[in-house]
Image (cartoon, rainbow, N blue to C red; front, side):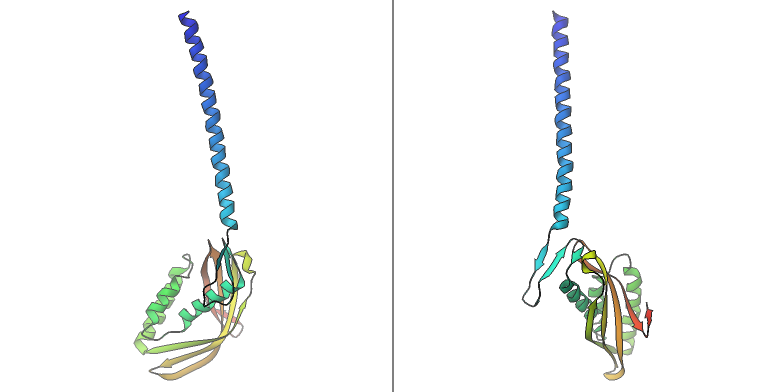
Length: 194
């Protein structure tokens, strides 16, 4: 009798174990499916920003953004990079670096530091007047290229020393809704200067 109770109890424990294993497997499967579902929702989520100073609707979703957002961010980044005085050059370049992709930040930072040092030493001021901005690549792809044309003027001790038409090519990517510049190059003639 004692042995039969022991065997029966053992069978009950084995059944409980099977039930617990099954419940754990169902919970694990549910958590995996929930993770996939949440990841899908995050990719499809859109953020629409319409502050009072923007005339167009801006849409950002994961690695996609509409043309209005790309134009606005490029205009702002170019303004930071190309419009400065010898007093503001450091702060403007520092703010510009927030838009630079970390994989190229060190390279771009070195060039900007050299430019800032020259501007401070020689009392240089620079102004860029944007005349045309074209978004070249498909904005929905998450990567692209923008071409900016304009007039660049340089002053040394408040004397105009250089005026030239310039074309810049800005390559960018959008990652998790953030606009990041991967390269910005000045085009001289038909050649691209990096």
